[in-house]
Length: 68
Image (cartoon, rainbow, N blue to C red; front, side, top):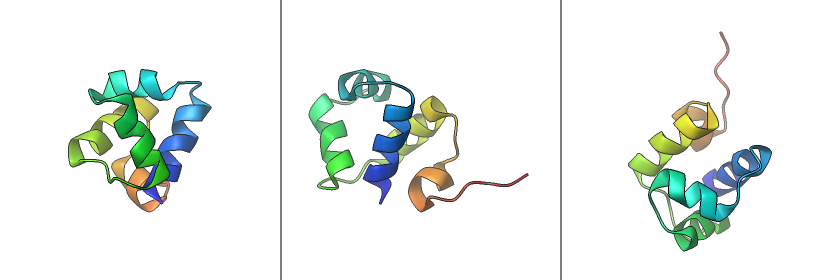
């Protein structure tokens, strides 16, 4: 689920939900809701999160890593 991937990446980077929210230009409750699976992220959130996490949008959405 996309919320689980958001949480895994955020925690791997040592970020709080509040710090992630600031980087994504959303509220901390929105990050919490996405991670809990009660809300879906916007396309803009997914794009920004991928940039912050250094991964692709496909990895966040589908859980697939691109191989070179």
